[in-house]
Amino acid sequence: MTQGRPRRKLTITLAKEPDKNDVGQFIFVIFLINIKYEHKHVHNSNIGYML
Image 1 (cartoon, helix red, strand yellow):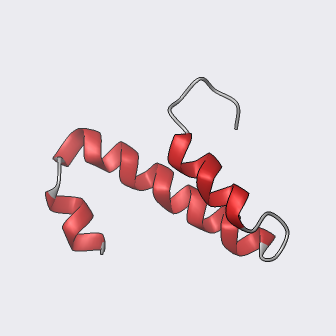
Image 2: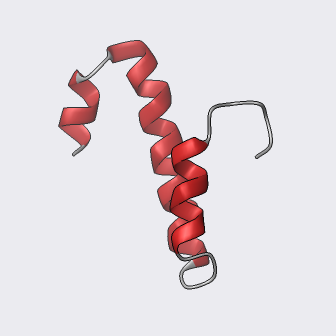
């Protein structure tokens, strides 16, 4: 997952509890990445829908 994409929030999220819930953290990271991609296409509407 080292592909020059903005990962500031992802890094902070992983730094909070690195080895407590690896699978959960990984899924959450994927979720955040998905939100970022969707945000580029549909701005805030899809984020509000997912939350």
